[in-house]
Image 1 (cartoon, rainbow, N blue to C red):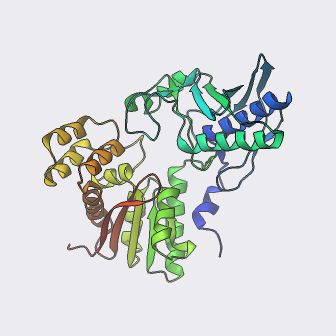
Image 2: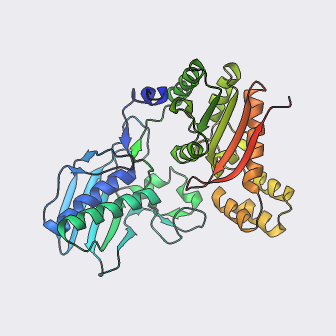
Length: 370
């Protein structure tokens, strides 16, 4: 079966590499030098989906039991604030049996508020880049007969200034940017190109006679839907943040059934009536979530905390801890908003997934009453 049209569409723009991929490459080069005295240049790493890109080193140094290597981030055709940034990894040996630990160097933020996938006090290096760097250290250690105990310090030149143009200050990440990435690859962000690719994906699904398609905000939610439904690959639409653009097109080119999958934060935006789910163009409506919790007869203290919570996932965690089905309510409201945009010619269900891809809320198929 051929690849999705959306993937082909995106190939027209040059892709780039995430800060997480660059930090992993710099880590691999520095740790190799720490063990062997020589820096691999270029250095090759393995990304989560099996790609093996190579990165040229922009800087290297070795001495005093410390090795450091730097990679210049290339974001491709994506208008990324970190494009051209110097990502530096400094490696040193750690105490035997201590494993791999991370530190924030200059330009990398530190987490100060709960609700993020990284603990308070830790460097703002998200889970996938952490895993990639740990795996790189372990593989290199095994190759050279080392224990693999290391301290990794990641720095980003100018990162503190870059962070002012991100949501980090509002999220309580202080001192710099976050090291991000789930696939290691930056797909160029072009609204018109992405929405056009969504349209083409719907066209192909219709042309193949499909009655059920699935549109997801990202790879984690897509994998979650794949575990629930045995749909052909062409049935999956790379919706990303463009729920509104997809739903408007489906109003004119309907299918029988649409499954929308996404994380709690993204889908809470759809529930609030936002068609664009990108963090730079819409924000989580904490007032709406507080209203939904009120309908669920949540304690007054929880409702008040919701209005000032740091992130949507923090709110979800508090609701789950209180045994309240907030994710189900968000799913229902998101489904209702989606039906308003797409019209009554199709049935829609909405599934809310957690960060691990497990379903935490669901609004089943229900035809519009309009």
